[in-house]
Structure formats: structure tokens, C-alpha cells
Image (tube, rainbow, N blue to C red):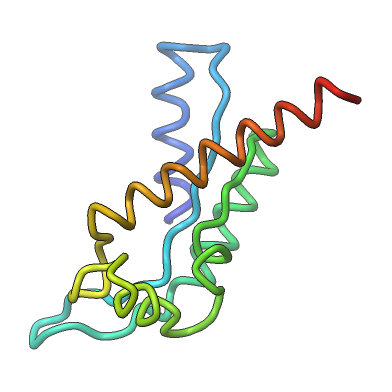
Length: 118
């Protein structure tokens, strides 16, 4: 269901911009809301895998935020303790989003530079 929802979104985008390229960004390690608070999101590795499968299916790049964070249960706690994630253990702080944006930019530039020097 998750992948089919993304496929629907991709088809909508491709109708408007058929020549566009995609960079899929995986989910981050996180907690999720439940009735009485927050609980660890055990779907994280499954969603990460689905994003890589979609990347393969559409010939898209994948930037793996879950791996960058540490790729294990509760690595979000280290990000929170470093001031990069909010106390809800779901959303990043401004500093966290800036760091991720800088890292994504650098990954794109590094990949581009490696391709033009080949």
C-alpha cells in the first residue's frame, strides 16, 4: 500500500513533468504518535527498503537519511541529545534540518563532481 501510494504520486508528477528526475529520501529513525503518547516506529526499516525498491523501479537516486542517522533502533535519541531532533523524536530541529539540507547538497555536488571527472 505504501509503495502504491508513492506510485500514484509519481504518476501525477510525471503527467505534469514527464522528463523530471527523482531523488527519493528515506524516512528517518523516529517515534510515532499513539493514543497515549509516543512509541518507537518499528516500520522504519520496512519503509527504508520500500524507498530503495521504488528508486530501483524508477531509476531514481536514493538518499538514505535512516542510514545517515545510524540505521538502528533509537539512533534518533542521539540526534535529539545533540539538539538535532525535537523532544517528540519525530521532527528535526532547525539545526537538524539545516544539517540534513547541507548533507544532501554536498552529496549531490560530490556525485556530480565525481561524474564530470571520469
